[in-house]
Length: 110
Image 1: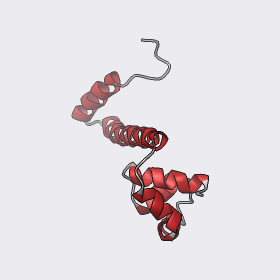
Image 2: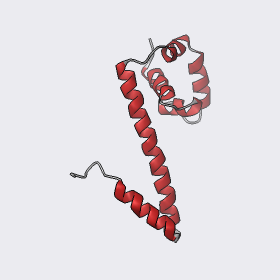
Image 3: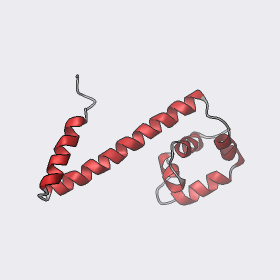
Image 4: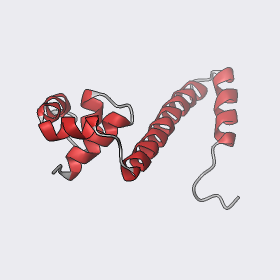
């Protein structure tokens, strides 16, 4: 039987995260993420869970993890554009404004 963090680690691996990043997504410390990932991959129960076909709940969790990862990447790009735009880069200002118009907030009622 896997613990909650071990299950989240398996889900993060299936969502495309690797090693330390998967451990951090599962709730392990960034300072010890590499060691935690290595220890988790040594556990027979974790390896069996990774080899088994995903259940419907795991598939939904993987899909949600992939959506979260895409959102994190988009936010990183928007943050970089914002920094460049604030420094006076006109093309970054245009791209930032275009990207922010395409993004809907959760609070929008549209």
